[in-house]
Image (cartoon, rainbow, N blue to C red; front, side):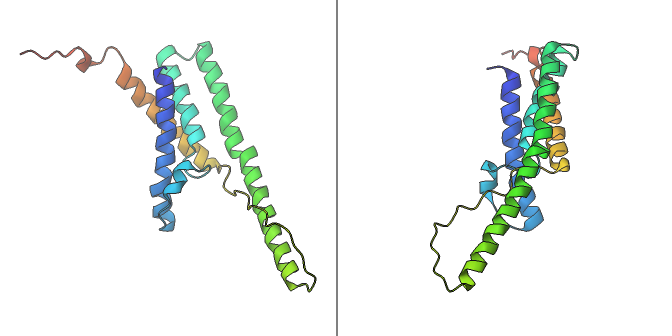
Length: 163
């Protein structure tokens, strides 16, 4: 696997890990399960594609096909993360609220009603625009640092130990 892939996966993991302390600071609630959840600040989707795009831009240059492909793919992913997926999350909130309302109505009726309890839908699917931007900035930073750390002309790369 190449370094761009490694850096992008690292970026995704860091973005997911950052969600835990940010949630704790905001809500005073420790939730390690957020590492495996979608949504929240920062967007790991945005972080991953931004890292890859930044790394490609620095490594291969912006006028390359690689960069163009990564940039367009990244923009689509970020748009989807805050657009389509966010709307799906909003709709899920409404469906879950409707289900709770129906349950209240049925509890007040004298007619016996039996139905398997539907599984509550996951409400945190998409991202707010600032979460996407936060992920994109984190990803760009990791892409820059990753590129700097992998450059062949690093000053310390030629350092040899002499005994």
